[in-house]
Amino acid sequence: MKTQVAIIGSGPSGLLLGQLLHLQGIDTVIVERQSAEYVLGRIRAGVLEQGTVDLIREAKASQRMDSEGLVHDGFELAFNGRRERIDLKGLTGGKTVMVYGQTEVTRDLMDARAQCGASSIYEAKDVELHDIYSDRPRVSFIKDGEKVELECDYIAGCDGYHGVSRKTVPQDKLKLFERVYPFGWLGVLSDTPPVADELIYANHERGFALCSQRSETRSRYYVQAPLDTDISQWDDARFWNELKARLPEETAANLVTGPSIEKSIAPLRSFVAEPMKFGNLFLVGDAAHIVPPTGAKGLNLAASDVYTLYHVMRKNYQQGRSDLLEKYSEICLRRIWKAERFSWWMTSMLHRFDDDQFGKRIQLAELDYYTGSDAGRTVIAENYVGLPYEAVE
Image 1 (cartoon, one colour):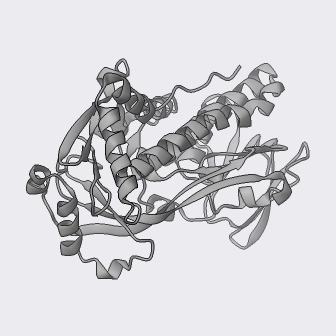
Image 2 (cartoon, helix red, strand yellow):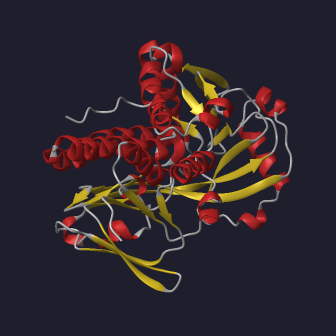
Image 3 (cartoon, helix red, strand yellow):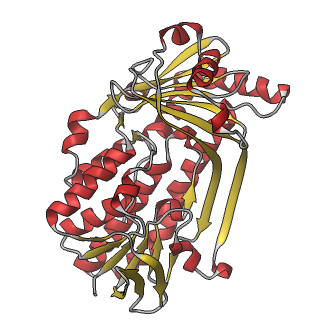
């Protein structure tokens, strides 16, 4: 087999990159080790930055998102008995976010790729990358018991934190930065109406809580919990009671509870691998960086990588601008570190860290300071809706 760009991983970043390149006449093959059903079964984020929304529209996969997604003009910070609204639209010159589940984004991109006849290979076993520093890198894998070799010009590693792409890179060429947080998020998905029209992030002495949503009838709620939390010890009643205890009284009184349809705990970490280009291998999304979910940046940061690589590849093939290939990593990393900073800041400001009373007072002072002026609120709003993409030129 031969292609121009081999894409490892069929999550939203791999599918989005593949669709954008395909529409520009650049041949791609997506190689995924899991089944399509498994990929669609992952429950992930649901807040899309304006830039991500625009990219999905450019990929011609936005019809359902535009009809079913919920545009949010703001969100709330709850702390010290107060509720402070961050007016995203008013503070950023009209920018908003879209609430639309990552699973649905993935489904829409899968459908778009299938409709245009582009190649996706699922349940590919023993995926390996070869000759990434040569002019003819290769991807090998086992499909239906047969060994397949895929020759290509470039490889896009969109296969996540645990994928093969970053593991292929010689360790002495990688520089890793990491911060692991001493808690996780215990999350529940339920077919209940959201408690509020907009997201609520709560700082409480019992720990952080988040009221989020996937639609007008499906809600996603989280509470901060220890990393060693045993989910089996958390029945629905215990979760709802703990969530109510961390919310403002009027919010808790309006909470509609019901059976959970999914319950999980996710650890929090910040992680960056530098650089993001190794010969003709380009790392994209979680393969190169992880953020705690507090700032709603995970999927959106992957989308900004896709934006950069898409334009690098488009200009390389259409204009002969091979020089731009060398700029991919530095362009991406500038935005990545700003998003890492914001996600770390939101996490540090809203979660409980042991019994550190000094730190707790600093958190409240910081929340009071940033919500106390248009300048402070604008800092939060500009980062939340997403910083501008850097031009590729």
